[in-house]
Image 1 (tube, rainbow, N blue to C red):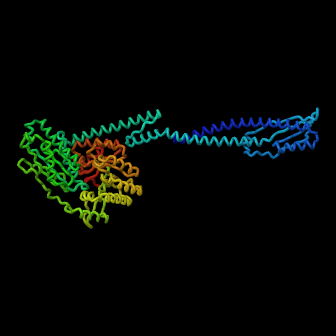
Image 2: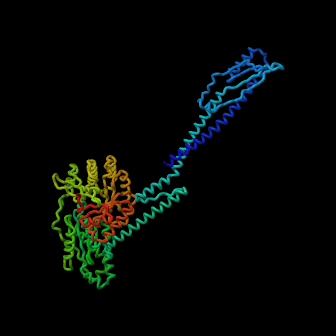
Image 3: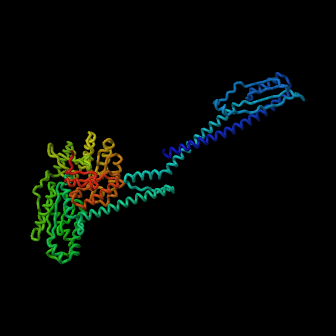
Length: 640
């Protein structure tokens, strides 16, 4: 039972007891008061009437009329006149006394007042004795009315007291409610804090709970930092600060194998052909400082352009990959100039300093082994006697609609959307026990009637450029809701950063989920990690609006910003998807195994399900459950 109800019960009981005591005391005192007043009235009236009769002629008829007139006007129960011997001479009696009060009340509160008695004189002799008793019905009525009035005011006072007490109690207990909500939030791995109340007892408790929540948040933050250090140690070169060979190739392979976001890219490799000579002359410390400068320059370039990633393949080899189609000549030239600028005066010390730089187109048809061979071919081709910039064109590369101009793309996309030639592909996401979690459903478009269905990577850049992306986003959600209404299994949709930040998209999505509340719980929405942390305020608003509607919310491609994962603890997220680059070869990569264990531990501590992306091999599939992974998706995932 709530405190408010207990307060009302206490007030009702207290007022009932108070009313009971009050009614008893008031009734008894009123009863005695009325009896005393009636007694005095009886005596006064009897004496007054006896005196009047004593001064009259003692004519029986006149006396009888006088007594009758007095009886009719004075509200008496009886008037009786007896002679000195006690013989009744005249009597008037009220036989119809019926007070307008409940019978039980009149029986319970019996009012009895002694009659007034006076002697009537006839000269010096006694003429008779007059006995007079007033009626008690008015006394009963007055007592009953007083009791009802007491009950009424007691009820009014009790109600007002209860209402005021409820308001005051709610205000007093508001901090307690906040602390209960805080305790439940902590139980749900949402480590919030509350404002400390003024009430001393509550303030002490709130301060202790805030300290607990802050301590857990700090612990998560520290664990995230340690995990970030572990990630850097396992996947990054300690000298240059760039990705090591294994991690760089995994990242490139993850991009290339992601048909939803990758269509064509560029790989650039720079080779210091005389690094051994430089090391011999400068020494290990100075050479490391040189490599660090080159690495820092490439890192700064990648920070400015998020489509680039850089790695150190070997001691003398640096590689840069662009996941977008760019002019490979210009990119290679820019990268070489950035590195030469970082080297600075070294070129004067070593006039023959050689930084051979080559570039190659990379298509979505390339796989991991092919990329390794491509990198090896680039290294073998470079040398002091080779051309400074070389192009190794992937002969297997073939892209549809490559030469289409803007007008053609607008016509094709508009016609496709008007005809609703759009569908959702299906890729299973399963738990480690093999049960379906949801279906990843990337969008497919058919640009021409009866033509091939193309992935998002092939049209998304044109859709953004032509301002058609919002229309596609809206149609994707509508198709998903329609599919769920038709009995489909839970569907996972990728929400682009632009869509997440678009108020119009959020309004339409909210309206759809509200109109189809029964299907909202089967819709899983995920936003890329870089979009989340680069637009954290917008993502918070996105979660705040959609979470109450029942849909599942998550972050995909998690891995590059692990140190900030603890910032998501209060958003009510349901899951994260770990980037495929961290999953690739995890069965043999002990560094990434330790990293994934720590990542899953942090994710579970803030209530997040962990799902591995891009699981390619059975060995990876077998290794992941022991690391704390809850679900998996990728080419190796097969159902039944």
